Amino acid sequence: MPRKDDTDAVWRHVRKALAMARDYAWSNGYGWRGESCCAISTLALGAIIRTRRGERGELTIATGDPDDPGLACADHYLQTRMDLGQHGCGVAGIWRKREEVMIQTYDSLKRIALRGQPVPGRPMSAAAFAWISAWLDRKLREKPDRPLSMPAAEARQWAGQGIVDGIADFDANPDLDNQPAWLLALVRRLFMPQ
Image 1 (cartoon, rainbow, N blue to C red):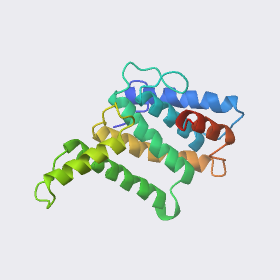
Image 2 (image 1 turned 45 degrees about the vertical axis):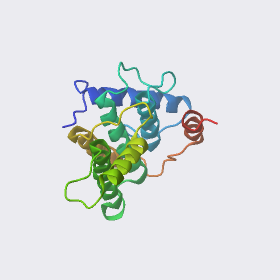
Image 3 (image 1 turned 60 degrees about the horizontal axis):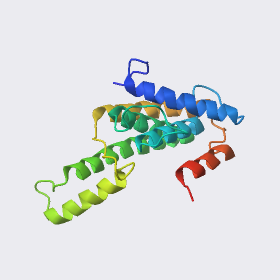
Image 4 (image 1 turned 30 degrees about the horizontal axis):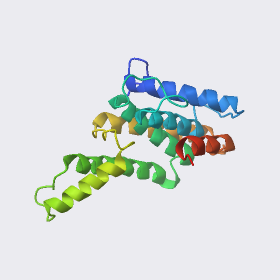
């Protein structure tokens, strides 16, 4: 069960990434209400992703192990917090439900990729399943030389907490510009190099 306190290793990663994101946003004159917002979660997620890829320097957090499972949980949390921070629950909770389905689907795809063998009783050749499994493994990795993280209940729980916190972020900032120019420029520079 997620604990948002410093005794939880995942929360320590999240807190570091959010602090870095807030500092960067404030230095660009960006403001919001509440603990966070979509733009802050986006930037914090970027820091976690770059750290998981083994990158160092700007927009990364200090960690001794980029394959730390706690970083994968932090990634799940910030992804859902960012998504719901942008949209909120939606009419009749549609955005929330979409995110919950995506969490389960992502975990199922990871299981297929990591299993690498056909599901018993399914009419698919072993060779076809192995090809699908290998393709999924390549597509789901953060970086080609980094292993795919194992599906885990803890990651799903953190993703669920991200949904709750993202909805609170949206409710505090329903009219906020979620894609300010400074954020788009940073994302282009760090994630889409020419």
